Image 1 (cartoon, chains in turn cyan, orange):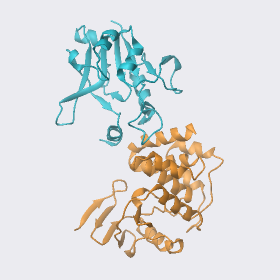
Image 2 (cartoon, rainbow over the protein chains, first blue to last red; image 1 turned 30 degrees about the vertical axis):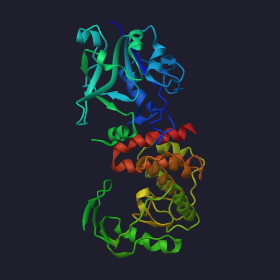
Image 3 (spheres, rainbow over the protein chains, first blue to last red; image 1 turned 135 degrees about the horizontal axis):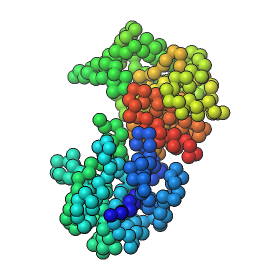
Image 4 (spheres, rainbow over the protein chains, first blue to last red; image 1 turned 90 degrees about the vertical axis):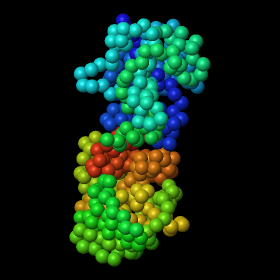
Length: 178
Length: 213
């Protein structure tokens, strides 16, 4: 089954303002920007954004208006089916030679999938990896009551480790950590 | 209470008592010479009890971190003071191990080669405020490498942005200088990255700021 990869890069950048005026996906992680890492891992991906991003192939950009919530951002994808949504503040950690698992082929399931990673926080065993496979954007939007994707509707779960870079603490831990 | 530390960057061994700092480093002589030279600059520094080729023993200073405005005042003072010694500005560029930075400096028309007094590592941890009086510690003076008030301003910018996560203060200092101060800040970051390559990420971010101006 073919699926489209969409990197959602439409946040207001409120959490990183103390260290940058740029949207957080334009911050570097080692020698490449976070968004460049993601496009390297998902070469066919499109970037859903209201920002000007001069350093990437402009044909990859799906332009939208600024939005106040994840639901508003995903509403720009109405009508799309079989979409892998990738948050723009994570970098997947893939073993050498491995690709992102093709959701339907590898897992033999027909519903939405949320990817999880182990949490370092003792209070929670796992947290979302920042990637979601959505069968139908329209159906998801009807389920969403607020900004959050309703995880209770994702009966199949998949494990995928990712580096989280969405807050200043996460960013510094990732850059300077072991 | 005695504390034993190792510098996270230089790996220098440091012994702290309530009133005394004993630092083992191969720059002990040049540090002591810098502390002596500061008498003429109206900046307070710790009293040096002893120094030789590998150890410096000095007074321990307590206080608070500086604000951006404190740093601006110190840098302005340095700008008006004569250097301790004379060097060729090219030595600063030659000492960079980042080829991109060396290339950018070679095309830079406004790198100010004016020699002034400088500290060499004007980070927020090396300026200790007692009220409105700054005490400066841990100078980084290499006898054959150029520095001036601008390289100190650049290190202060890097320090606020990266160590204090305070872009606003970094911009306050930068506002007193030419835009190329951000390139110097990246260069100062690359000197930090010599000790810990993970800091190259921040050098890249600062180069991005410079190139977006």
